[in-house]
Picture 1 (cartoon, helix red, strand yellow):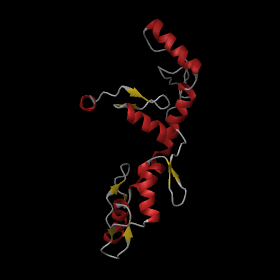
Picture 2 (cartoon, helix red, strand yellow; picture 1 turned 120 degrees about the vertical axis):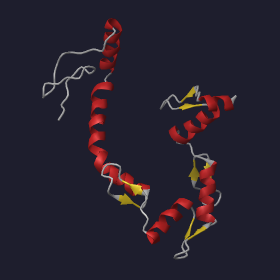
Picture 3 (cartoon, one colour; picture 1 turned 135 degrees about the horizontal axis):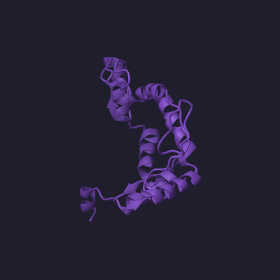
Picture 4 (cartoon, one colour; picture 1 turned 90 degrees about the vertical axis):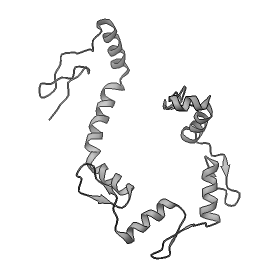
Length: 180
């Protein structure tokens, strides 16, 4: 049953809070407890730290209490717990910068984290613009209701005819907007 859902892409189980969909009910249960609930049912018997999943508890024990670090740098003999941390460290010796800015195409970084921080600088104004639109229009229940009602009556998208500062109006939103 699961195999057929996996190959067809069917995901009949939906999270009621974020609407993410899952093929298996057990995956939905894990998602709900690990993402939306503050329940940390897995306790470390050595220090009392609490975790949302058994795998997080196992990683904690290996990293903190057992101090297992299976990855050793051949350049400086420093040890690392995760392969990702090891790979990022090795790049400090090799000078490799595999993560390239997709906006400028010129700046490169050693880690994905630094690239994401850099992209935050480029993409923040765009994100802020669309976030403001979302808050302004789609969050208003009255607008959503009038949108549904108007489009059901006429079969078209509603338009109030009002325009923004530069004379342009959006054909699907009730208020005008400014474009540069």
